Length: 425
Ligand code: NIG
Ligand code: FE
Image (spheres, rainbow, N blue to C red):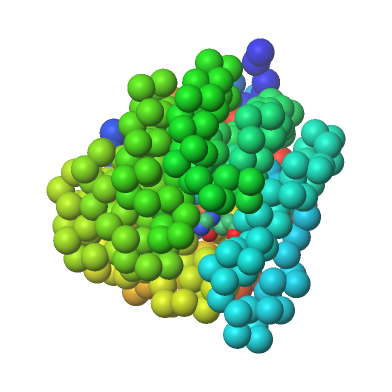
């Protein structure tokens, strides 16, 4: 299918992140944005075809200039479409009642142990029809798009039975086809031990390994396998078994690690060679060093720490230790009910000591690598997908400096304008 070329011209800053497609950026390289001033990008057939100064692209495309639709990006910042590498997108219901309880002193784990928390959303999600789940999740996806996000990872984990996990994953697969945002699916059957297995958690671990993982893999409904490794949920030993079993079926390991308590989750991620370890609020220095050594990406979720009123992960320390860092919303109804990746970037600066350049790397190319899409999205380079976000600020630092505002003006997904003037097209 060939559509009209789209030509973005005169960006005050075109943030390309050139040269980062093969590996996530680490250390000092996390500040190398490769900015082109008066920048220009030519998009055609869903791909990026030319990148350079406006003069350079105009020269290269001299003969075809009249064929293109033009977007004037003067005074604006153009970046790769943002990537959110950790969401619990597909769920039903909401938990503002628990928010109220937490504000009165209850903790996240207390609420979960009383049968609320993940269990509450599991009940709501089990009861919801495919159509309801689709509708609710689509609303969130639209909001992601309005915040400049063009790719998200989405985890299951509110079904906790084969039938209901499949339902969540099928909704994600359908949305991936129908919605402009690309969805990368993760199976997270080991998100909590369901109430009916409470007395024998190992029996549930066996069920995840023997029944759920083979079926999900066989139906090709997920690429990754994730587990909530936390005291009172799944032990490091159970987590290791689940992640190794997933790998035998081609599902790559990810892990919710060291969120509430130090539990050697970072160490486990490094030992098994997980693609990413996520949360890491309480990760040990040893675990951080091991992650740097084995190249595990830290997916940090400062919105979750903010919303749980906990101290954020130490992003600064991890970058300085050489760990590749990505950022994400963790969008879910319990610990982070937000779709605003731009706000997460603000928190990355203000709560984790990351710089405006680092948080941009962490939500584009490093986020893409955290879901194995670094070759396809996350930077503005020839032959990558034409996923582009245009922010109505004159330089990238203002994205963080003028915090708490959605500066997204235009979003282009696979070469097609899907948000214009801050509204869905
Ligand atoms: O990433 N920590 C575990 N899972 C989610 C929260 C899920 C929920 O509370 O519904 C998280 O924070
Ligand atoms: Fe999560």
